[in-house]
Length: 389
Figure (cartoon, one colour):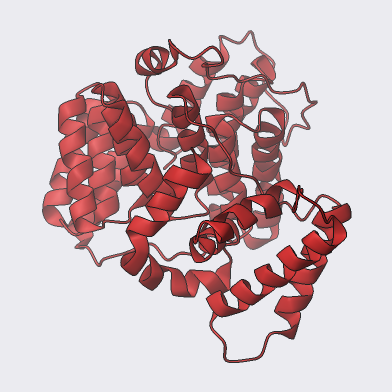
């Protein structure tokens, strides 16, 4: 289930009132759409109405063909609307898991196209972070295992009904179903998040906060619980608590781009300077940046077997920083934005924390839960002091 992507507009308006640059922008670049299937030719209402119809057909009627036609019509009606593209992309992603194997890659490509359009069109927006998470799922790169529990079949059926009702915007009915589901399987943290979020969308923020907090007693590192609790704190007027919850969100999962995007949005609105830089190796690097990445990759290739992932990364980062300094000597030291960020962390004594938060991969994921338990305060402090000063 694709949960809501944004906090309510009213609270964000208050948060941004004092910020000259404070507004959620969504200005995607116009881009032609290659339609996966022909769209019905009829006079269409607005795009959001079509999305609502699509969701009702999908979640309640289980009419996937009808839902697909409505999603396509919605995108045709408003091709630059990032939320509409996100909803259709998620639908394609779900279809990829349901269709026959020979069609699976096709629907993954359709989902990828929608997500990529959003991420490229407005890369600093919150919704772009949600889209990048979609691309991570499609690539099979969600490296941290989600805590799961075995629930009774009856509770699973009730929760599934709640999901359908939520998707169809029947929130009061969804709340009743989620309440029964959590009672039947109280150790399922994700279900408490669903239960809480249903209260959030009907603007019962105090109950939502109570239930998000309950989810975190079941699983203290549930990233969605932290992220949505941040939105709830914002609605209740506690801006600093909201920012802290978003810090815990990215500490929970360093690859959670929706969390990073929300942290940037909230933090900059409250006057913090944002200093996170992507380590994008898909862009051809030059100068010190290129020397650093080459040294880093070679060091990892030369690493001895049996060493911990963190030890390998630490040695590779040290070699990368040395290579960057040799390429561009002088008082400016490392001028590549990404490696300058890593150097700042090294000089401040937070190199290990920076490695986990900025160079996260499958190998590091195996060691991260233990590191997070021992050093959660240091991870949080690094984000609060060096990433958002």
